[in-house]
Image (cartoon, rainbow, N blue to C red):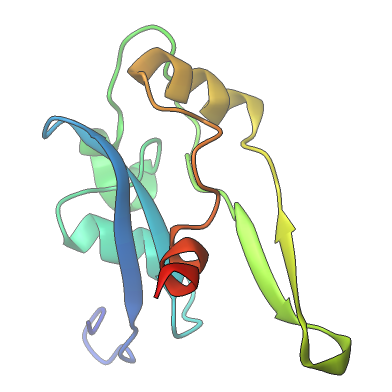
Amino acid sequence: MSGAEGGKPAVTRYRVIDALGRRCAWLALMPHTGRTHQLRAHCAALGAPIVGDGKFGGQAAFLGGEGIAKRLHLHARAVVLPGPGGRDVRIVAPLPDHMRETWRHLGFDPDAEADAFFAAAAEG
């Protein structure tokens, strides 16, 4: 996907972890390029802005309702880094409190697979 006019191309893989009809979805995102705001721009371009991302998603990024913070719901849940001896080091961080509360409110399991891409690679 190319960004603004003159912007460089960027590639993002995504997977749906859970969804609440067509209202919102929990996505796992994996950037393959490192462009500034890449994930935010790609989600907004797809018509699915990240919750709380008024800069890229405008008013459509705010679901409204009690239990859903008006903060950005973007979190580096799992990171895999090359480690010593060729073994990868996987670091997983829990959801921030505002996101955990939103997940609870929407009925998503905040402890579901922390890295959908890692799980998919391990399966086959």
